[in-house]
Length: 373
Image (cartoon, rainbow, N blue to C red; front, side, top):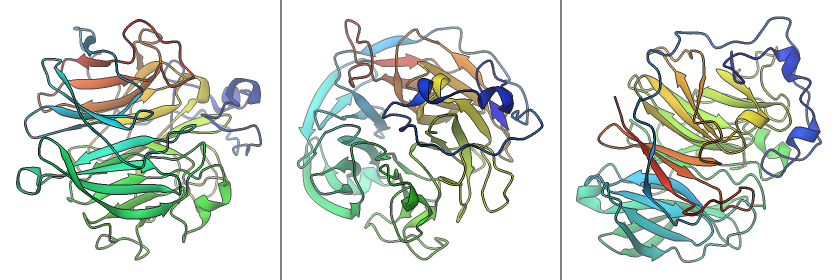
């Protein structure tokens, strides 16, 4: 098991982190579950980082965004960026040119809800389809659009995902299998995570029409369960799937996702001595992470930390083992929400300082570019 503060943290030390440090809406309210203590130190297994962070530090690509939540790349190399609170989708070029392409109808932005995930069809050059995840007045939902320079032909493909002021999940991404994955939160109703019939507190896997994908473990949209609030999804070159998850009072998590896996919430937070549940690869204290977006590049997954105000680099092996986490850019750019790997190998990272919990600086929110090696 891997742990944060300087890359290693004992479970005993972590258990002293109390509600005083973590009882914000982002990490939950102080009615938590105490994780099962272990005698041994929980550390990440696998190699240390192969190389340090890129020597060329992050540069600002574009400024003046309003809570950028997700980044998805078009085949042209330009990116579509969602703004959570405005409901707008912005197209951003590698030159920094910013173009507002439209507002998603029906977005109800309140609390942690609003316009969140976005994914571009793997067949975009043929079908011109993009997908968005947003909070409406009634629910969280996934809507398919046609995008050919402008948004058109909206079609809801999944509706009825529970919504609330907190824990709405919201990440969308196509996996290497060509199917669309979505992360949902338990919206503060903890029991929904263990309810296999609920769409809350899950990772979902679907066709582009919103139907359960073939070989889903329960014959429904549900791919994995027992999640509190997943906001990051990524795959490595071997097809391993990773997800970041907000903890409550003590442990945030990086998980290796398996079909049908139960990741324990609310029965456990962090590592459990219970083989009904899948243990995390890495845990962090909630004050050093609150991990949202996730990307894979250079044999590592990169997790954007909100409360932790840093970018975590976690090396991973082809068999899905995690090495020692490394904290980068701590406190330099404020809250980090989104991270995505660009076609040229660079990382695009979005700040989230205008979300009501940050300390906005002149130019926020922004997208930063970290050059690839």
